[in-house]
Every structure is written in C-alpha cells, then in structure tokens.
Image (cartoon, rainbow, N blue to C red):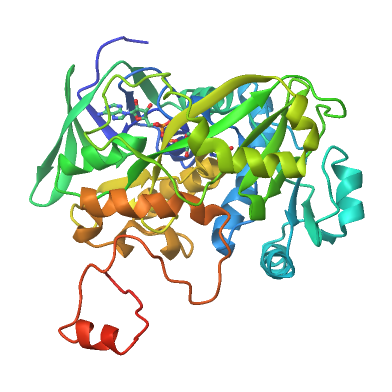
Length: 442
Ligand SMILES: Cc1cc2nc3c(=O)[nH]c(=O)nc-3n(C[C@H](O)[C@H](O)[C@H](O)COP(=O)(O)OP(=O)(O)OC[C@H]3O[C@@H](n4cnc5c(N)ncnc54)[C@H](O)[C@@H]3O)c2cc1C
C-alpha cells in the first residue's frame, strides 16, 4: 500500500464521523471501491464520540423507522464481519406515557412500526415496572416495549464501519481539511484540501455541524444550526444492571440508559440553547462545552420524579456537546439541488447514531443509482429553500427543533419560532380580526 496522497477518486467523502464512515462502508458493499474519505481531525472526534449511543426505532415517519431497523441489524452483525467491537447491546427499550394523549401517540406509532416489521408491544404500567424496576410508575398510563432496540458505543461503531470500508477498498485519511469544492458547469468534480486537490466524480458532504460551511464553499444550502445537548452519568445505583433496557419518558423530556452500574440521563428540553453563532471552530475535536445546570434543570426535575433514587446518586460526569439540528427535526439527505453530483448526509438532530446504518445505506444507494431507492422525502434536502439557510432564521428555529423530539405531535401542529417571516398584504387586517395563521415555505 502506498502512502501517497490521492489525486483522484470516484467518490470523495468529507467528514469521518459515523455518517461519513457508514456511507463509505455501504458504497464499498455496493461495489464502488474507489472511495476516499477525508477527516480534518480523527475519526469520530466531531460530534459522534460524545453521543449517548441510544438506538431507538420508534419514529414519526415509517421509513425513518425502517432505516433504523436496518441499523439495529447491521450493528448486531458488524463485529463478526470486521473484528472490531461496536459496543452493541440489544437491551430493548421502553417508552412510557404519563397521559392518555401520549398513550394514543405511542399506540399510533406502534401500529406504524409494526407495519415496518418492528417488534413492539403495548404494555401496562405494572409490566413496565417489571422491565424497569428502578422507576416510579404510579403516575403512568401505560408504555410500549421494543425488544429489538439497543445501545452502542458510537466511537467503536464508527471505527468498525471504517474498518469495513477499508476492507472493501476505501481509503480513509485523517488530518486532511477540505478547503474548497471544485465544480465545472454546475457539476461537482473534486475537492481542494490543505494537502492538495483530488478530482472526483461525486463529492459527499458528511461534515456534521460543519456541513453548512462546506455547502457554502460551493453555493449549496445545508440548513442546520448547532445547539447544546446534554446528559449526565451517575455513579452506581441499586437495581441498575447491564441488561437494563433504555427508557424514555417523553412527557418529562428525558431518557435513561445503564452505564457501568449507573444511569446515563439526558433529554430534549422544550427551549434549547443554540450554539456556534460565530461559526464552528475548525479544531473543535473531542471537545465539550461547559456544564449548564440551569439549562439542565427541567430534565433533572423530571428525572427525579421518574427515578427518585437519583436524589442520592453521585453525578460522575456532565456531558454538554453541540449537535446539529435542522428546521424540521429531520435530517438532510441526497443530491443538492444547486450542484449536480454533490450529495449531503448531515443534520442528524441527535439521532445520528441510530440512523447511521440506514441513512448511510440509503445515501450510498442514492449515489450508485443516481436516484433514491425508497421514499425519503421527509429527509430529502430538496424540501428546503435558500431562505432556510439564513443563520438568524436557523438560530431562532433550532431553539424549538431540539424539543420537538419529545413534544406531542398534535395533528396540524404549527411551529412557533422564526415567524412571521413572509406575510401577505392582508396579514395585519387578518390578525386584527383574530385569524389563526399557518406557515408554508416561510
Ligand atoms: C450529547 C449528545 C448525545 C447524543 N446522543 C445520541 C444518541 O443517544 N443516539 C443517537 O442516535 N444520536 C445521538 N447524538 C447525535 C449523534 O452524536 C450525531 O447525530 C452524530 O454523531 C452525527 O454524526 P456526523 O457524522 O453527522 O457528525 P460528526 O461526528 O461531527 O462528523 C463530521 C466530521 O466531519 C469532519 N469535518 C468537518 N469539516 C471538515 C472539512 N472541511 N474537512 C474534513 N473533515 C471535516 C469533522 O471533523 C467531523 O469529524 C447525540 C449527540 C449529542 C451531542
């Protein structure tokens, strides 16, 4: 093998987080072996390394559920293929409901997940308590149980995908920064880097929270904005064991998983804290943000309701890391409408570990077939317009997006932030008469 820096490749992938590595892995599986992946730091050192590693299949769009169903299969098999552990544990997961309305939502998503072949049971609070004895259940209406869900170690999983990609012929090169995208007549044709140029037929932007900036290098809108995202890790808690399922309590905005006999507890607060307004530092590698207990308070209060033992538990570590969020809480996938042969896989709204297997395969198939192989409209990058890439608009919107994870998905729900944006000439008169407004394309 030569260490010479390549000057051409069929596909160049920008970014060595879990998404870029999964795209490289799946391209080689489809027989496209002339793939180069460039990472400005070390693999997984962006956002991937500090993820909690929950892999849950229950999603509001059935095709997103089916992508994650594939992820669970892949994560269960990858170690045997590559010889590198992934930390995958098929511990199952529970989602509990505090209200009758929430239970209706859980039953509806359960029906839709079943249609995708996902194993799921609707269970009583008593059955939930048997599966998760550490929690208080007196205020619960019911729960759903997904035996196929699990958790993984995000860094190990990324390394395992990278090894699989290398075994398939891909070249993965760390400490190379992409500084420009070459294009000719509206078609991407390579990248410029701090180590030289590489000509390519296809360029894939998997640059995580830097993906908006990489898009701007070639006039492509990648509407995402970072927000702070937090969880704590506790010391040992009695009754918490390695096989304890993942547990989500969406009415309390929180989730739990076992780690070394203690609990990881994090969540999605309704009013999030955007980050990186002056640009994302290039050298933000294996880095965290300062603890913010004020922002975390609403999650902590709810966690104490669900797991009263937390009041006595030692908090061993506070993780606060930035993650990229999009205007509608769905990720960005596919060929950019502004530039042919330039693909994007970014903006994973804190579900990048769960989605990486399925999204990586879907994007690789999209590249190889020059068209998506399933209905991916909820995540298709073409659903957004240039105004969605406005940084002030994005900043205001992601305050709400992060909290959408566990918000009640009421029918006809309208988002409240970053509006009014565009108004009809009659707006003031309609408002004066008490009109109720919806929003389409701003
Ligand atoms: C606190 C926290 C908890 C989370 N928990 C979960 C969870 O339980 N389950 C789950 O599914 N998800 C979770 N997530 C979300 C998950 O971590 C992300 O969605 C996922 O890691 C995104 O992966 P990525 O590959 O898109 O981005 P990254 O991992 O950031 O990878 C992008 C890479 O691109 C590189 N790059 C950028 N610009 C350039 C350039 N110009 N040239 C070369 N390389 C470049 C970066 O260095 C970086 O390594 C969590 C996130 C946070 C912050």
